[in-house]
Amino acid sequence: MSVFPRVIPVLLVSDGYLVKPVRFTGDQYVGDPINAVRIFNEKQVDELVICDIDASVKGTGVNYNLIEEIASEAFMPVGYGGGVASAAEARRITGIGIEKVVMNTAAVEHPDVVTEVSDALGASSTVVSVDAKKKLTGGWDSYIRRGRTKTRMSPAEAAAEAQRLGAGEILVSSIDRESTRSGYDLKLIEAVSSAVTVPIIALGGAGSFDDFAPALAAGASAVAAGTMFVMNGKHRAVLISYPTPAQVRGLAEASLGGQR
Image (cartoon, rainbow, N blue to C red; front, side, top):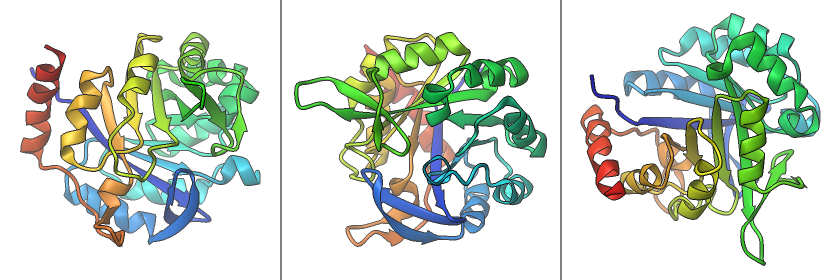
């Protein structure tokens, strides 16, 4: 049986509303995340990731009310990130019906939590998000707290440490490319994917369907996007979109072609 690449919309939530920042700043109101989930249901989305982008920064913790609403509406597997700081919280989240738990800040400030969550849920349900930003001297730094706090690790080092701790998947996001629609940072994907053996989800910069195959050829196991799936045109009008099943099937051949 053929296995097609996963194409994953990432919805960012702040104070319960769907928003879209640019390079992690300047949140633009998009709408109701539940309405977006319903539309993605109709479009037969492979998988969905919901991130509460202010939970760790503001210390508000996990938004269980939002999670319950999403779990009751979503027909596809859903990952949730935002304020997760313990295995008990992760178990509660998956008990509601969410398949994966995504961690960023906790993975660096309290790394044992990654191992505890992995032990409780399994590695396949434990995702660590690595947010990367280019350095003027070359390479990248990795960040936590919504891109506000630099860690002492490169993205490749952060990903390798996350895998060692028990993460079964890495979501690597380019801060520089986020919401720019300028294409993925392929060198970043290559650097991170070469450092780990677990699947990599590429995020940040997708502008069109044509950007997906190069990201997969660079080493990503799945491609994710936010702006591309929720906004349209230079005026960033709200419009929910998603590739057709035929396009996703064709993506497997296109990405393999790029690897030859």
